[in-house]
Each structure stands twice: as C-alpha cells, then as structure tokens.
Length: 89
Image: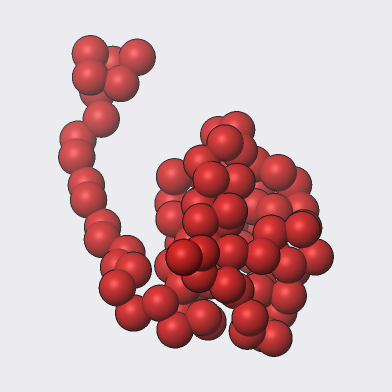
C-alpha cells in the first residue's frame, strides 16, 4: 500500500504541488533527478524547484519529508570517504 504524504508544512506542500502524493513516488522522482548543485544547498525545496541536487541535498530532502510525514523508519546516515582522482574520476 502506498504511503501518502499528507503533512501541510512547506516542504510536503511543495512536494504535493509537484504532483507527487506518495513516499514511493517521491523516492522515484528524486532518484531520477540529475546530479547538480542547487543555488542554495540549505534550501531543500530547491531540489524540486531547480530539478537537480547533490547526493547530500537529495537525501536531506527525503529525510525531511519523511520526518514531516511521520515515517520513523527512514534514517539519514552520513558516510565519508577520501576522494582521489583514482577512485572518483
């Protein structure tokens, strides 16, 4: 059964304005957005408005939307690794 996004806070309202009504639709939509930096990484709504995002902004948007809608099983986990020319061409 799809998980409806019903919260009326600004981020979820913006998500619904984009014709996205379920968690599953949101995850698929964000997954297919191209990689790119938004004009302000602190404004998660720009991922939807500018239709792009980095790994960090996309994941933060999903976590904030999950929190707004009571999806407690969704966790944001930070992973770090040393990037070099050989492992990240």
